[in-house]
Amino acid sequence: MLSPLPSSRWNFSTAAHLLNRAGFGGSPADIVALVRMGPEAAVAHLVDYEQVEDPTPAPPWAKPDPERAARLRAARRSGPDERRRVIGEDQRLQRQRMMELRHWWLRRMRAGPRPLQEKMALFWHGHFATGFRKVTDAYLMWRQNETFRVHATGNWRELVTAATQEPAMLIYLDQAQSRRGKPNENLARELMELFTLGEGHYTEQDVLEAARALTGWSLDKTRQQFQWRPRLHDDGEKELLGKRGRFDGEDLVRLIVEQPQSARYLTAKLWTWFAGTRPSPEVNEALASAFRESDGNLKELLRLMFLSTAFYEPEYRQAQVKSPVIWLVAACRQLELPLPPPLLATRIIASLGQDLFLPPSVKGWDEGLSWISTGHLQTRYQLAGPLVRGEREALRKIVLTLPADSMTGTGSKPLPKLPAVRVKALFTADQLADRMKLLAAVEQRLLQGQLQKTRREALVRNLEERGAVDADGVRELITGVMMTPEYQLC
Image: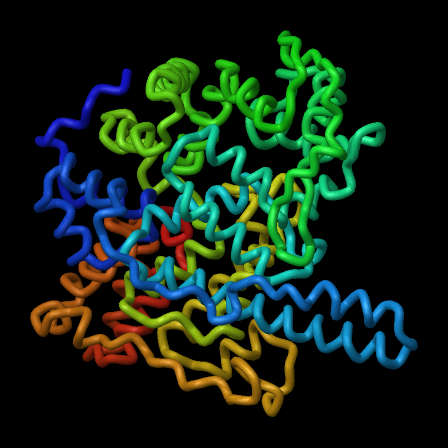
C-alpha cells in the first residue's frame, strides 16, 4: 500500500512534485538538484532539515515585555484621554509588529534553508488556529509560530501539549479564565473536535470532564507565558474516554493521543495537506498504523509519505489549488524574485483571502477550491503582470486603499522599487531565440508540465504576432501562463 517509490520513477516531474508539496516550489535548478540526489536522499534533504543551519534571527521585538500588562492596566484606570492615548499607541505598535511578523515569516518561506519546516509551521498555523484580533499581542503570535517551528516534525503528544499551553491559545479559547467549579469548555471541545479526534469520536460528557482536567492551565500575563495554577485545578476523579482517574491537562492529552482515532485523524489531515485530496481508507489506515508504531513520530510519518509510490500517483500531481501564501511565495521562488516589501506582500495575500495570523475561525482556513472564488481568481490574474514587471504602483492600486503619499513600508520610509523578472538570468540565449523553446522553458519553470492545448496555442499565436520577442514579450508570456487555470495548481 505504501511501497517505496522505485528509483526508475524518480525524475524531474516527481522531484518537482516533492518540492512543490514538501516546500514552496523552486527553480528548475532546484528541482534538478533533487533529481540528482535520488529519492531517498532528496526526501532526507527536506525532512532532516535540522542538519541545515538556519541563521534567521527573530524579530528584534520578539521577547517578553513585562511592563506592557501593567501599562495597559494603568491606562484603563486613568482618565478617558490618557486611556485612549496609551491604548491607541499600543494598538498601532502591535499592528506594525504584526505586519513585520507576517513579512518575516514570508521571507523564511521564500528564502529560508528549511522549506519543509516552514511548510509544516504553516500547516500547524491553520490546525491549531488562533487570531491576533483576540490575542492582541504580536509577541505571543510570534511565540506560537516559533513553537510550531520547534515541534514541526517532532512527537505528536509533545506538540499537542505545547500548542495547547501556548499563551495565544489560552487567550483565544478563553482557557485563562477557566477554574475549578467554573470550567470553560472551549479549549476542551476544540482540542478533541478540531485538533486531535474529529467530530463523533467523543461525547459531550467527555468535553465536560476534559474541561475539568484542564483547569489550572493558566497564563502569567506579566511574563507572557503559560502558568500552572494548582489552586485553580479540579483534582477530583473524572471519567475520560472510557478511563477513570484524577486527570489533569497532561493526562488528558496523553489519553487523547493514545486513541487510535487520533492517529487516523492526523494522518488524514496531513495526507490531504500534502497530497491535495483525502487518502483512501486503506492508505490512511496504513499511515495511521505506522504513526502509532513510531509512538507519534511526525518526521518518520512524513518520510514514509514522501517515499511512497502512492504519493506520486498522477492524480495527485498538479492537482492541488495553491493557497494565497503559496501562490505568492512559489511565484517569487520560481521567478527568482525577492518578496515585495512588507506592506505590499501582506496585503497581496490578504486580498487573495489569507491574512496570516487572522484565520476566519478556530477551524483555520478552508483549503482547495475555496481559494478560487470568482473575485479572488480575478485578483490573482490582475496581480500577475505587475508582479512580473515589478510595477509597484499597479500592485498598490490593486491591494491598497491608501493614497499614494501615504504609502509606507515601515515607519515613514517610502516603499522601495520592485525589480522586474530578469529575463536573461532565467532563460538561455537559445531559448530566447526560439519561440517554442521559450514557451517550453516557461512551462517547465512555472508548471513543470504543459498547458492545455488551446491555451498553449493562444500563447503561441501571441508570440507570433509580436514578431521578435524582447524582454517585455517574455514577461508578457510569463504573465499569460500565470493567468491560466494550470498555474493555480501545484
